[in-house]
Amino acid sequence: WADPLGRLKTAIDVIDGKKAGKYTLAKDFPKGALFGAGLSDVPTLFSQSDQWVLRLAKSFEIAISENKGAVTATITAGMANAEQAAQVKQVADGLKAFAALNKEKIPDLAKLVAQVKTAAEGDHASISLERSAETAFVDLKKIQEVMDSNKSTKQTPAEPPTAPAPAR
Image 1 (cartoon, rainbow, N blue to C red):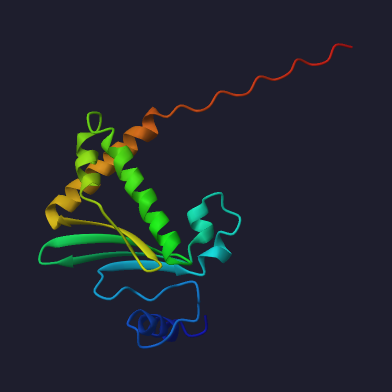
Image 2 (image 1 turned 180 degrees about the horizontal axis):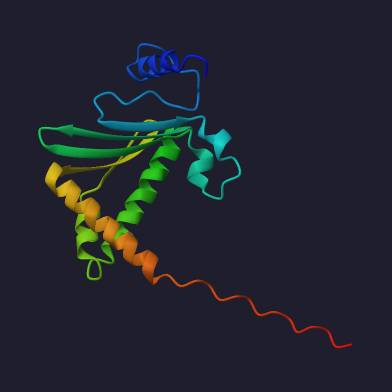
């Protein structure tokens, strides 16, 4: 911490791609993205997870980009092989179908999910959604409202019954 300005310059050089970062878990910033984040060496981080996709994935990346007023959000999972990538795509397609079952209950969400694209290319599986910039912000607000309403309607689980004290 002796040279905070030097550390800041180094960090900016890493972000700009002028220098390599020293942490192997962080992936390179996706080209052309307004926002991006990624993890490599995912199995090391999630080896004890109950979620199979976290145990099997080699890497994850999220990128948000804009082109001519359209915002695209993409999440990509790097898998061990093409078969696993195809299976992850099948799971994503199944989740889309499940969301479609609720179109009467949550029509806006069903319409949005119907526009999600899934892909498996080689050992990578991805989901992406492209929306106009204006629509994307409206969608985010609706999603936040649904999440907030779900939080407020959740009830705390009842305490398990306690056994009566043994008679003496």
